[in-house]
Image (cartoon, rainbow, N blue to C red; front, side):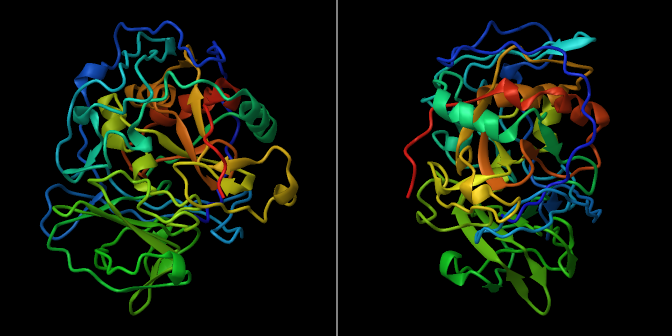
Length: 417
């Protein structure tokens, strides 16, 4: 919720973008080779297994420096850091096609992410839902799991978005063992604990099934020594409840700036009251929008991705439930091109990058199929994933070739409030 993201270094050469038409139609998909949508993905989720849950984990704490503006639920700014996690553990996921996705070629040299087709209104097939720790990550009709390949482009908002972010390339805000947001997975027997909040009126009271502070993985360090956003994300197996906190620390008890509890077996929209923050500035759950190593390396991602821009309006659109105008950079409150929290973008078909891995191709295809949902203030077109020592340069660097101009804003719901 209080993201302040690291500005990326020099981008790798971008080879080719072939934009889709304004009516949201997709180009001709490439179907030979690469990852197959029918192959499904392993959703052995989470990063941390505690107290007898299956799987193993590593916990390498660390942080990253940050530049650029961001905000908390009150519109303030802060620094953000990496965090740590592994991509192992949890239950095996499912297979199946999502939204009619085709494969992606990986024949060497320049590589083109496959196209996609399918109804944006139908939601993901139940067999294609993302799974972490044996739990579905919300329902097939949830916004995070719904393809937007056929959604029309919102030309007016697209013009504003492109003017706001300018000539930048997208940037993966994850990779290595200390950059990204870890996901803790705990067993059904995990004791629940009380949490105190700076924003108790907009936080779920709990108690929360947070791991013991000696083993809990917190973004940006450890529970007793953390800087930046310090998100604490926890999925409880069995109950399939998601517990999320922002700016969390442990000093004789858990304390967070704000917190939210979600039932992963239900649609996420409506679980948070309109106008309430969560552990994220947009009032959304954070976990469903993170790219995980297990799903990306399997070649297919069945959900939309969380991303940030530098200036947002004092408004939000579905599926968001909260706004947070940042205080930094200066002038955001009066920026005529600021956009609402919850706005969604889709990557054009035909994007070509050099030397991508199977995991990088999976990210590109997910951006074309499910798009990205604006969840927070931060550096323009930074998108988030879990930290893992298993990410390679081929998983991360090719994604930096894609310009933000290759994305289109899909139809925007009415502004709230």
